[in-house]
Length: 181
Image 1 (cartoon, one colour):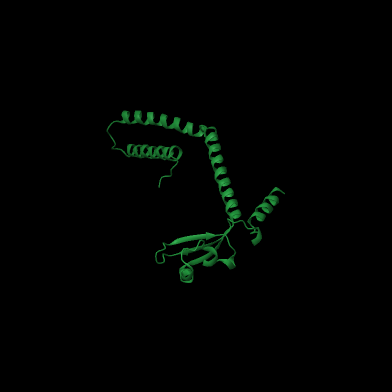
Image 2 (spheres, rainbow, N blue to C red):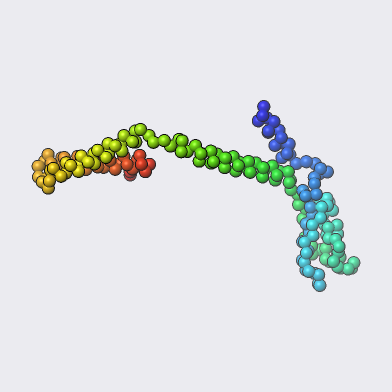
């Protein structure tokens, strides 16, 4: 029901009113006159109907004497302009409402974000496992020494490298939130 009322109100504001109801801001006749003899160029605006949008009705006071009026008016270019200030106002209100809603949402997220991002138990456990594996791998490498001649030692070395790669992938995915390519 509220949505229907809102649509009706916005629809009535966007429908252009009749010519008689238009305010003086919505319609105008704009005449642009170039320089003529000793008269500089000028732009004239006046609120007149579309049929009266010509130099004789808009250009007041006439800058040239009576016998030069026709020649001066032939140089002037007059345009009838019409706009709906009501539509412009409605669009501005809608735009400001959307921007305001987005600002409120941003403020809400900034307030709620610290509450949402609590430390995850799973990632804490992974960090603890990584620390334990780091200490174990350091102790294992110290006990084996520089020999890597047998097949078993080479397999253990490959296993250690694999574990380090897995640890690096965990750090990358869970800490930096990036996938390795």
